[in-house]
Image 1 (spheres, rainbow, N blue to C red):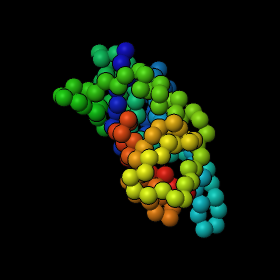
Image 2: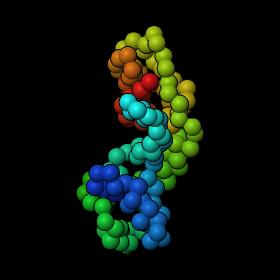
Image 3: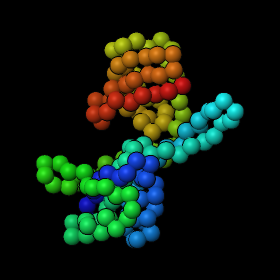
Image 4: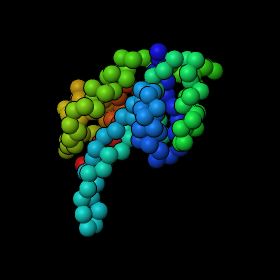
Length: 152
């Protein structure tokens, strides 16, 4: 059985993952809980790390069964075939997200500086500062091939 990435309708990631799990298909939607502040209140909000993506583990012969769930759009393809995600990559993602998320704050960073993320989902990853503002830091994590934005 392989892991595949499914593209979903916007804001349907958790519903799709729950429906697939209810059908007996192993589905994983990576989420992170953050504290959002409005003018009148603060609230913890759980949001997907990868908007519009859910990962499923199933046999290649069973791939079409996921389209029975409302909200599934298509599989993510690579070189004309559904992209297969290695199990170790899913486990690494689960491990990173299992830790408590805290905000990374550094005041004297400049473009081009190297920073090791001390806490949160990407703890221990080394990145190069792309830009900084009063409330955000953008890091390029070359080892993962992503641009990470850290907010105060």
